[in-house]
Length: 412
Ligand SMILES: *Cc1c(COP(=O)(O)O)cnc(C)c1O
Image (cartoon, rainbow, N blue to C red; front, side, top):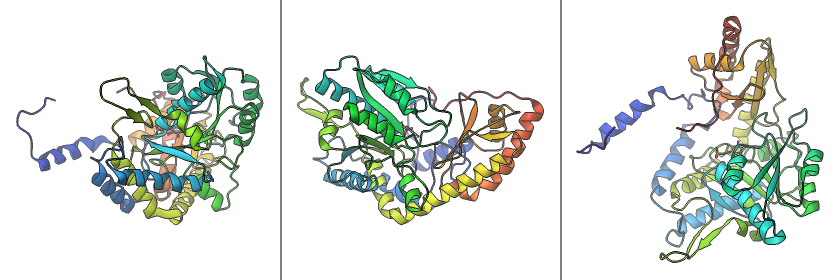
């Protein structure tokens, strides 16, 4: 496409946009078990309106926009309370889980350098910790020391402890980890970190807005937040189970002093003092306003209802998967994530067959398996999905088909 010489009318442009999405997965209809989250049309409309109203405002400099400073402070305060962060906790909003994890690793590297003179930093993390940690390792020159998980897919604290050396600047645990959806033994990992004076980051990008509510519902959730001694930072994605617009995550540090290690300042150019909290320079106020609005609208009651319905849908799908001959859950779901494989069919061929039926699921491995991120929207479609899953499994089995590996993220 070329930039048109003469611009087009807004109505025509919007029509063209709508036509472009014809082949997209129907996430509002619950057809995507990844990438998108939906708490109903009212929440979506509010997020969009709040985003639209602040889309041009720029959080790069909140002196010009005290509104954004106030909204960010409010969102972080709401989160700090949920995570039992106490009065000392301090954080920043980021553009997503990836940026939150980048900042956790950067802060740990900087702290290791400042406090212990570490020049060849390493981090010790389970093989299940998110791919964004590898990106952080790549960007920031931190060696990633991946430690195999136990048979139950949880981090192995003893093996992690054995891998800690003089250059270790960070230990990582996840609540839950993404691939199999189980919660790492955060208390044990954090204890190792605390005993050696090393930061411990808990990646709660998935669980941060779910586990606090499952706990209130009486589910047996192991401790994973700031109540655990030794946890120094936690990441929580708001654009996942916070059900707000894309571009919103948070990183919270146990103290303001720890938060300082993630910030950047310079005056080494002719444009004056420049400072920023994260990766971005210009940062849309839209995502911040949408997060503020959706959290205020849903409240604890709303999130409790959504967590319950996502959890029930997840358990229903899990039971349905187990009832399909040849299908196997990798682990009993501890939050709202689910992974499963097949004894007698290629899981990626099953995913292909599901996509032909309009369902989008994640493909992962090793081991080759399918991954579902179950959210509130799926309560209404769980049974329809299970029927199509059984049919798709049968189809893949009969055809002995091989499917493409697929990818969680792409380079396009
Ligand atoms: C989604 C996710 C991330 C990365 O978040 P993005 O918002 O996709 O950048 C990190 N960790 C976990 C556990 C996640 O589920």
